[in-house]
Each structure stands twice: as C-alpha cells, then as structure tokens.
Image (cartoon, rainbow over all chains, first blue to last red; front, side, top):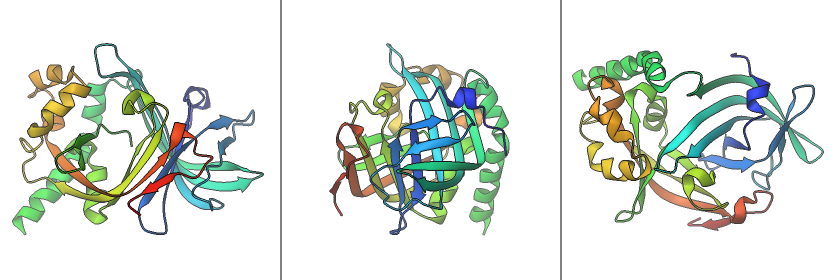
Length: 132
Length: 126
C-alpha cells in the first residue's frame, strides 16, 4: 500500500470510522484518535457500533478550512482501510491500504488530470450500457 | 469520502454531484444503493459540534452528464463561491464538468449531540 505519512496524519483532528452494518447500510461515526510512539493508530471506541473487534473498516481522516469569502481551503484527506481490534476500551487500528489527497501536495488541476483513467472507465461503461 | 452535499427542502432529499473523474462512488451506488452521509465537520456542516448520520437510498443519474447537474449550481455557488472561476474554464476542466447526479432519500437519521459519539445517538425514522 501507499505508505502512511504519520507526521501528516498527526495533523488531522479526528477520524471517521465506516463499516457496513447488519442492515446493509454503511455506518459512519466520528471519533478521536492518537498515534502512539511506535506509529500504532489508536481510535477512541464510539458507543456504536458496539462490536468492532476484528471488523474490516475504513477510517477517513479529513480536513478543510472555511474561507471568509465562502468555500474551503487546505483540503486534504487520508482514507485508510484496515481492521479494528478492541483493546482496553480503545480500538487498535491495523492499516492495510490507503489513498489520499492533499491539495498543497497535488494541486487540484493535477489531481483531475491524474484521475482521467477513472473518467475514461466510467464513460466506457456508460457507452457500453447505451449500446446494449 | 469528503463530499459537498446539498439539501433539497421540497423533496427532503440530499444531492451530491460527482465528476466522472471521481466516479467510483457513483459506480458503487449503482451496485448497492444503500448509502450514508455523515455531517461531522463543523467547518463544513455549519451544525456546530453536532454530528448527524443520514442513511438512505441513493439513485445515480448519468443521463445528462453535461447539463443534468446545472440545476444545483445555485446550491453549489452558495457553498463554494469560487466555483464560478472553474466554470469559466469549463473547456479546460472538461471532464470535471461531466457530472453524475446522486440523490439520496433519507431512511434513518442518527444524531449525536455535541458530537459526543461515546454516547448513544438519537435515532429518527428507524
């Protein structure tokens, strides 16, 4: 997987845990987190979902800054997939894969250009469905 | 993923529009319409510290990628006034402006007062 930059990760204020609930709907909940000296990610355990031991989840770390004239700046996120393990009232998170964007590292126009293959794939599938 | 949602008071639905460049979520909606929207960042939600999770059924409409989203431009402009600068360069950002409209009909709403997720949420519409 892409390597997690733990220094940058530490600049996020909170995390959002998402997993698929028993009803089939995604369940997302925000919570606090901390990075331990050995670079382990520890999440504060939310009241719900009650069972998070051994669950495959994604954890989103995101940030925006509201601009005085409206809109947002300093946009960045890290989306990390992994497994949570309950540990003394907290959740130890074992990352597996991740994706991220930080507009200060990859400007938006370059992000768009880099994402062209996904656009082409979508158009290709749409064209095929129209012709079917 | 971070998104820019709009609330449609007349229908009670939420709308997000997605460029085909970032269309993985729209593809997922076509496979499974069960989605959730979490409003938890005070900078974006303007809901104070409260956190609200909306679970609902989504419908992705890509029948008019070039113009179908334009009816929501007014909502978008209120949240991101600078979007007009990108719109002025519509040709340069051509595929960014090919957009799928995803409407979400809420089925269940969970709310955490003051964003305190260590407590049980209030549940509406269960």
